[in-house]
Image (cartoon, rainbow, N blue to C red; front, side, top):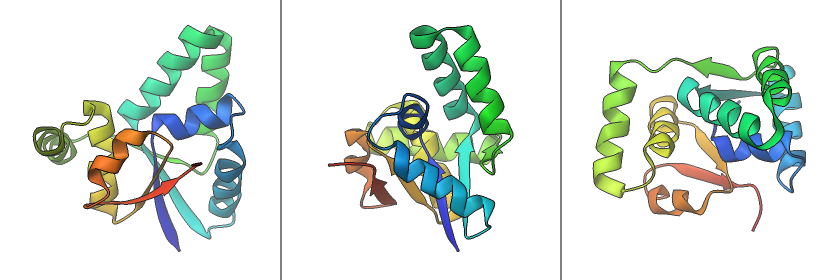
Length: 134
């Protein structure tokens, strides 16, 4: 069974029906069938909610949050270990701090990052990345 960590880019693609949305829909179906495991750090989920509220309004953001909470996506709280791992990645690779939580969680879970964010090219040497497009 494959394990995947979603970044905000991936969920935004899903909720805005962008080119990566079909792959996310497939991953969610596989997770519902227990053929894969999906995870997102709570800080990255917060980024999705914030972005959707700014772009589409509060109702859309609340609806998306409800959809994630009722889906098979496991929301992972940030503890000391994850926060410090993200800090080390920030110091080493210089990607966005919230992206560091995605990479650190993927390392901890030995999972693949699902994204379309080109910043993750900087960490492909330490985590597997599945690109949503391109």
